[in-house]
Length: 136
Image 1 (cartoon, one colour):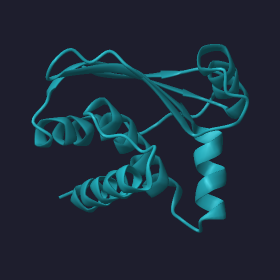
Image 2 (cartoon, rainbow, N blue to C red):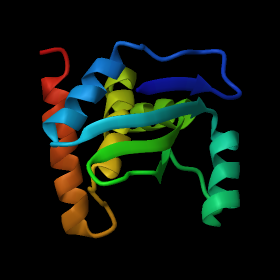
Image 3 (cartoon, rainbow, N blue to C red):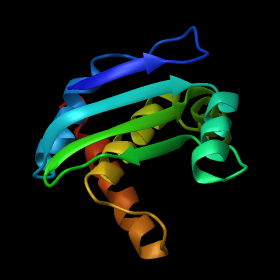
C-alpha cells in the first residue's frame, strides 16, 4: 500500500500517482509492501537530513529502505518546496519534476543507487523511461 502524508504543508499531491508508482514496482519485478511518502517543506526535510543522516544541506528527497527480499517497503520524505525550486531552476514543469522525484524514491527501494556517475546515469534513464510511460 502506498500512502501520502503531509508535514508543515497546506498543499496536497495527486493521489492518482499511486497507481503509476505501483506499476513501476511491478515492472521492476518487485512486490508492493508499505510505502509512506511524507511530503514536507525544506526546513522539515533539512532536519531529517541532519538528525538521521548527519548531512547539513537541503535536498528534495530522502529514502529510508525497509525492503525485505522482493517486497518494497520504506519511507520517502519529499520536499515540495525544493521540487518547486528545482523545477523553476531547470525550466521544467512542476508536476513532471514531482513525478521524477516520486519515481526516484521507488527506484531506490527497487535497488538502484546514484552515488557513482554510472549509477546516476542508469537511475536517470529509468526515471525517463517511467516518466514517458506515465499516463499511458
